[in-house]
Image 1 (cartoon, rainbow, N blue to C red):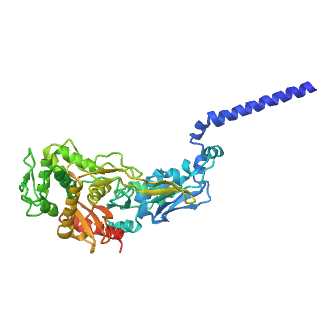
Image 2 (image 1 turned 90 degrees about the vertical axis):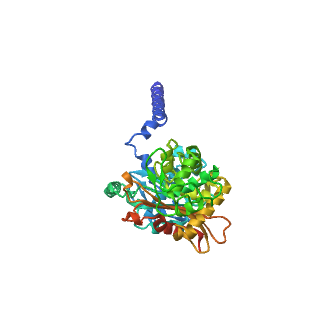
Image 3 (image 1 turned 30 degrees about the vertical axis):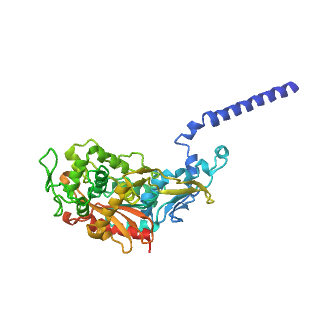
Length: 485
């Protein structure tokens, strides 16, 4: 009898060893294949089992979570979704995440290792801490002013703090409510199809993901290149700029929208936006210096992230002299995002220094403890400080007595540059209305805000489209919101 008991015990021990070996095989060696199996919904269920962390603007959450009591329990909610959509993006149980919801998903979903001091234990226990929060740099008043200023028109606004690179406003219109994509029902799929089929492309983030010909606002860059290169030494000296100007090596002529541009000084040409003067200045400066200055401002940079990716703004360094003339007035292949043009204005306001733009001030755990902060931002010198001083003088004149009077703010120092960019086949499209600017309050020691505004559908009558008339008032409202009473 004892022998049979012993055999049974050995057999049971072998079964136990086999069971442990198989468990090790499944949980250790085959765990990856099971985790990646589309039929395994454990990770998806766990992802939505707890409320998602929030995105904050001005200390107030603009996102939330609602308990559906379903298997994928918590859905994302948005407070005034269309206003903040170009910043938050969406978090969908079907279509994933975009923009800040994507870039900061680890913190918001509770999977970032910084959220727990014992990551190995969480891995073994298949648990995750509560999602953390993302504190943005947005100025709520500026964001609202930009959104309300654009109204029903198609366009974008970007505003930054020149000294730091903090993004104060990021607006794109038309917009959409990210909440319609949050769940997983039929309504979500219908909303997805509707939004993607909309000809107005409401989910396109025009402030950072769309590039435009910057038109005459690019003359800020051309003026900086010409001044730094010594092509212009006296801003009041008359230039040798014929009207019309024949593009080098061609019979094509360039004219102006205003009179008095023939041989105009840099000061007058900037104030009244003389195409002929700046086209010739670009040619005289040369493609190497023009490209170097443009790249110092941020053009041709493929690595801009805020933290989500920003479309590359471009200045073509392979152009011939005729093409260079057009590039120097913001046409031909020159393209820029509104954020890039806000950085151009910010560099002028910040003594020629470009601070890398950023949108996240810090991330925090659920209990408010700081996980990470933005820290010092990279800086590069776009132009000589003396050149920046001269450009501030030129931009002030545009607002005080030139084409940008609609941006003037009583009691504040404001500089700006208008632009009207041609586009389309044979330039047949309605021109884009541009305005870039910076402002310094009466009691401020340095400019507090730099803004870029572009309006795509400014008017049905091409002749009535002007940056000063359409875009400048929007920029003024944003600058007033930042400067305060």
